[in-house]
Amino acid sequence: MSKVIYVLNGPNLNLLGVRQPEVYGRETLADIQAMLEQSARESGFTIEFFQSNHEGAIVDKIHEAREKAAGIIINPAAYTHTSVAILDALNTFDAPVVEVHISNVHKRESFRHHSYVSLRADGVIAGLGTRGYLAALDYLTHQLS
Image (cartoon, rainbow, N blue to C red; front, side, top):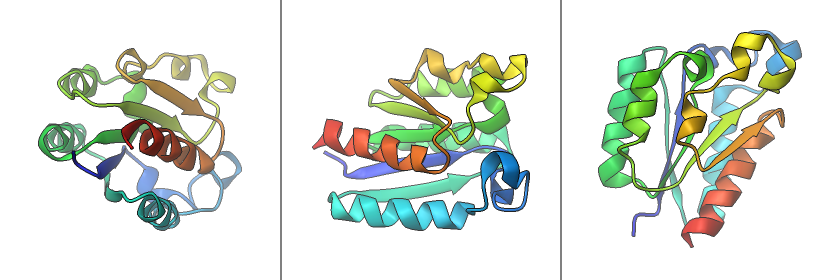
């Protein structure tokens, strides 16, 4: 079995740490990646970390994960609420998927309350800040060990 977990991040997450720090905090995407790589290593897993502002690039990574990954952690960002293409790609992936949101989307604008990705996700974590990624990784490493 693969010991690789894909961590996929959607649009504007490359600006973590500087974009709306009152909502998303001051940690950067690089900080999240380092935190996850260390935690994964301790559990005998590796991380394939990816961010794109382009929907098709995220779909391509999900397709790649079908052959290489034991699980996916995905923060689709704004695509959460709009992307049937990402949902369709995730529906072709036959391993666990955890959806992560840094902010509590249910305390924000009403359009953020709907998630296409949740229709496929095995679990959803929202509002735990960047620690939500660690919670997702912990869940997957226990499920997959």
